[in-house]
Length: 240
Image 1 (cartoon, rainbow, N blue to C red):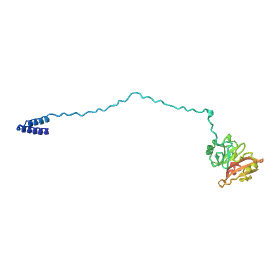
Image 2 (spheres, helix red, strand yellow):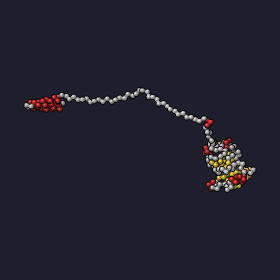
Image 3 (tube, rainbow, N blue to C red):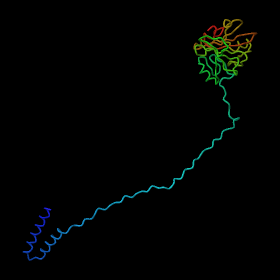
Image 4 (cartoon, one colour):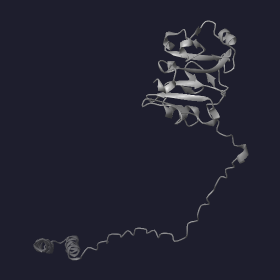
């Protein structure tokens, strides 16, 4: 308000000065100034910006079709059966029968054989030694377990298991000796009575392993493989 009064006083002063002037333009100029001051200035209101609004669609969303792929299974009679890794015809070596190796635990041997090895309760045993079998498919085969590990494998009739050289139950004593001319040694102390031969390896790494062949009526009656001292027991676990 104070500012307005000062401005009015200035205008009046200019008007008074104009009255003393002969130039009409001066009067007009003063009046114009006074009019401009007293006339309120129109202001343009700020432009209001209206934000666009989005109305959510209420139209139903079409469901995508679910595709499935049919799997065709072969007929039951075309599915190959699970074949046990250990079979009656498995090969005998210095350290193993087929996939079952000396030194394996019962669990490891069962996994390797594809057959469950079970303790043979009909055989003599001790706290640290017992025999196990792999069921009726492996008749004549028994596994001596000492301190939790397979230490010896016995092959008896009617098992058809043979060594790599073809020696099996029924092989003549002469053919046995011819099969291993550089490794066969007489080993009668490996049996309670009768005759026996031992396959003795040449490699020092295998020095504690043996295969003993028992001879009856001129041919192999039974044989066993394993690591000392278990392979040397004459009476099985009774001696262990």
